[in-house]
Length: 436
Image 1 (cartoon, rainbow, N blue to C red):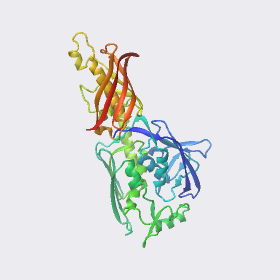
Image 2: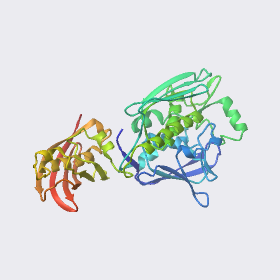
Image 3: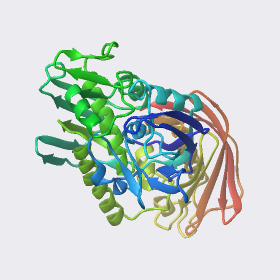
Image 4: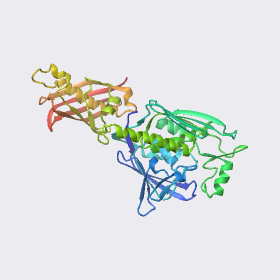
């Protein structure tokens, strides 16, 4: 799972009635800088309180049938549907202003209308890699009659089984390989649901003041009470998958793995999110990291097929989507080509400088497609190549490439290589993307 972080291109407003409070609420979604994550802001408070969408800010006292975040006495209830939409659409950085303690519930009880609002403003790639939590070995959790397991998988997949005594819900199973299109088409339209007995109980506690048959499926012993029929035969379990997507987003980074759950709800979803968040923290402590936002060698190796002795880029330090990239190559005396080029007078071959430049440009080109690790870059033309100064051991090559044109799978770039601020090589490169 290799992709750029992304945000929305423009701000937008989403208004409605809070499910439990019954109050009119306004939320405003704003673009955010890379590595920001998702942050809620209670703008009705003075001073404004920012609450990051992280498992460390979950209010355990408030967890029942929804997910609540809290900080410094400020709370926001029922955030799971917003978080599911944000995560399902792969929006990594976002600031959400809210003027109450509960976001608006979409009119039909699903996330479909919120998805449409996001798609209207569209998305912006931010040139910084997403560093997912990769499940490398099984992670299991069980409590009461609830079971969770995360297993290695190339992508993000969720499988869920629900079991209800009510025969109109019964036992349902669904499994989805998730991406933004699948989420929007198969998961987002699934509406929230409740048993009539639970509705009566919640109302007696002063909750679901904004709930109705217009924004939730209600089931009693005779069946579905709504006029609108089910949108999917397994709509109930699909909505449970939606809830898991939202709750697990509180890990704070996308998950690369297959999540398998049975009979879970928000309480257990959040406990499992806490387990995964602890794994993420442990990895950050034990793995030497690079500068925040860089495409380090571990990310590069996921994208590029090259390996020793032909992987000639060490780090990408800047990437502007479909426009520009800057990469580094540290040249050491241990480079294998110095054994023969030349003994006693080591000089990096000019063709390898161009190859290194091409690899940096290849990362820019591959970053424009989904799942770049499934593709290769073929360079089909090198023009106007010039070599100004020799490059030797101890030099650090800085490659700067600009995208001149990009048409579907073909592109042309202009590249310049520097050492200590001085130009050592330049060339025009033409390339294309092919499937591995």
